[in-house]
Image (tube, rainbow, N blue to C red):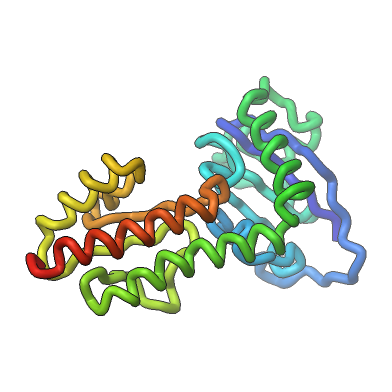
Length: 229
């Protein structure tokens, strides 16, 4: 069953590839959509399982506002009547994916990232292994703190891209942690406004050395502040 891959960026779907499955596939009665924002380069989802894959590209692939969509051909042309013409994927397919002017710069940046991932980072498998290693360093640092740091997320639901953690015994120390980390060159560690605490974002662009530096800082901060917690 044929599938098409799009960049529907800022309401301008731009097809970059027409992909064909070489294995037999029988469409299910109810096509399954999935979002894959943080799954890319973490796991390798088979397009055969889904009627549509929708993945936000921001942070891992390209600038904010770009998404990647892979849609099965037999699902094209079934948009709801209220769907605007420019948001109908069939419109993109019928017009060479340039029904209106595409955002060239974000797509160009995505192309550079894809080339790097494929040619230098080992492809999906290589990037997945590297991301797993980076996340493990941070989670291991949390576990090694014996409760000084805490992950508020259940182990089976933890992200490899964003690692939130807190200092449960003293929330004021979290402010000190962020301030001292920033001064040490470890930036943007303040947690999401709805959660608080700290959040380490270890997307594709973050090197192993950066994550190791964070783990070392966490241990040093604990040693200096343990008695205050």
